Image 1 (cartoon, one colour):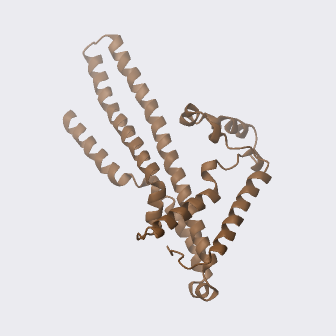
Image 2 (cartoon, rainbow, N blue to C red):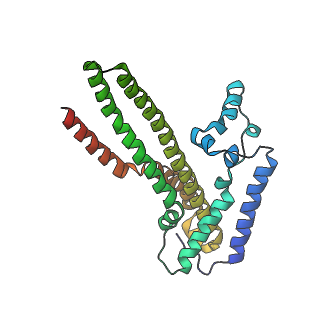
Length: 248
């Protein structure tokens, strides 16, 4: 990771000032509107209705750069790089051993585990579907009143809608974590490259630095999206096998 001890603080400040200036200039000079997500209500964020105007515009014509929104407040490059730097400095000043992974865990663990909680609820609802279907078929076979069968059918529909909303929120959270991870790693690599001496940079080579930024950091952004499958897939498989054994 490179802890930056003894590096030129003035150089870091110049780099951060340039980063903030470029970020602000890109947002202000583009002529684009603010991201509606920043001012959207809770229901709008749950159902993603704030995206509807953009979808309607895209259905009528090809979208251009000025049709798109500015970057959301939580996705600003300068703020993300600054948060990574603060977490880096906090761990360093506390005398704790740290790596890129530990810094990213410190920054994103809460959102990552909240997505895991959403996934647990989603999978629980998903497993309820076959149970309700079994009960519906049994009710029809036993000649149960239409109100009972209809109630089960309505419950199945409601669970399917809830399941869709939850999985959308799950991936939305993890996609944002992934993007933030990629941005922060690239900014950290770039900052470190600016502080390395000419002789040190010659030993490393520009090719390795570019590879770290363009390939390695970019590949890591896929990891948070599917990391929950490590524990989720075995548990779901066990639950399905138990349900099958009960039916068979």
